[in-house]
Length: 276
Image 1 (cartoon, rainbow, N blue to C red):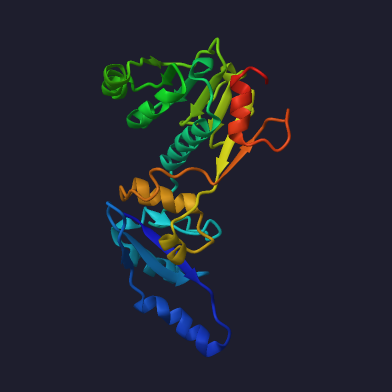
Image 2 (image 1 turned 45 degrees about the vertical axis):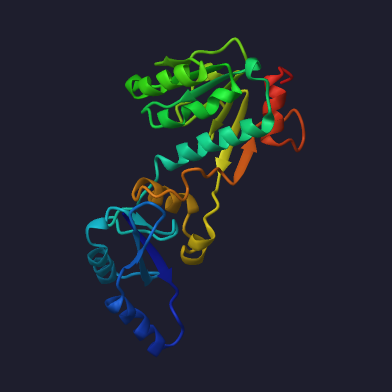
């Protein structure tokens, strides 16, 4: 559970400004339900709170002061209980889902490529079987191999496929598509096509995702100055809600400069055929 701080602008006029400052005194957090998860809270605050107002905001947020989703342009007090929530799991989910979506569209020959997932903490074990239709060789780089034990058995028993677990990345003899879920890229990936969410020049081709589309329901209540990934990450990581578990990045940029105006799936198709 968490609190969204929604800032309202200051009006013009002395009387209106006085009412504006008093509004926070009576303002209470609103409870918003989620899909199959815990609710979150919304609190309307002045766009430029004073020190005393920040104290009042902290009291109203209660035990969720360390789980705040707010506009990036709103600076939270350096000293105090209020802490901005920064998603760690959600960007990796979006990276994985975006890579799967691109592979589905590319229709590459499964025998032509290797798929590698870097998942240091083993967060994506439950998703890994989604990759089996796209390559005859799926590798996972992780320091938590025990989290992949059951999924490796499932892959073998139900799909007749083997998932190779490694503690470190090794180049492949085939074109290698790396889904970098943990942002741990390395120079050894210089010949690979890499999907990630942080800027990098490690791969032969780098695909970088950004932005996410909120549901229509959330667009109505979440201010446009709040970063959508911050909110989607909070509702997924802190509430266990289902709205964004299958979401993908809204935009994908490619470092490929061989061809003009190619889609990511066209780039992957070309890369898998050895033409890049």
